Image 1 (tube, one colour):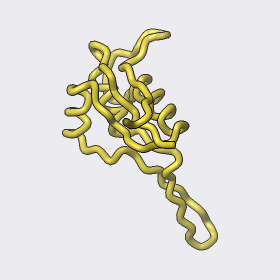
Image 2 (cartoon, one colour; image 1 turned 90 degrees about the vertical axis):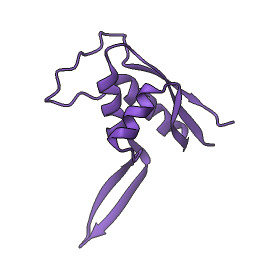
Image 3 (cartoon, helix red, strand yellow; image 1 turned 180 degrees about the vertical axis):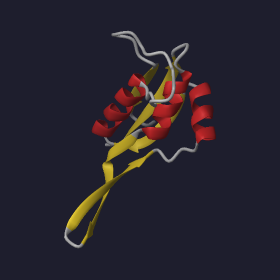
Length: 110
């Protein structure tokens, strides 16, 4: 069964980490394996968003950010978005324990 991940809202002050998370989140079940000279390597597929689209999605919540993913992938994406992504060179605020950067939900399409 396929599920959709919906970005419900972004917590005040955490817009940057949510946009960064949208750009860097990966979908584990869509890993592409290649083998060269007996060595295997993996490339994990993300949401395929450009920075402008990620910015629009983060400012237009509620919005579907991933469609037709497995239940495990949906939970992974939800947890990653709620945690946010914090690049080393950015001085963004970190959420307090028990706080999330955004509210995301997993829904059955329909």
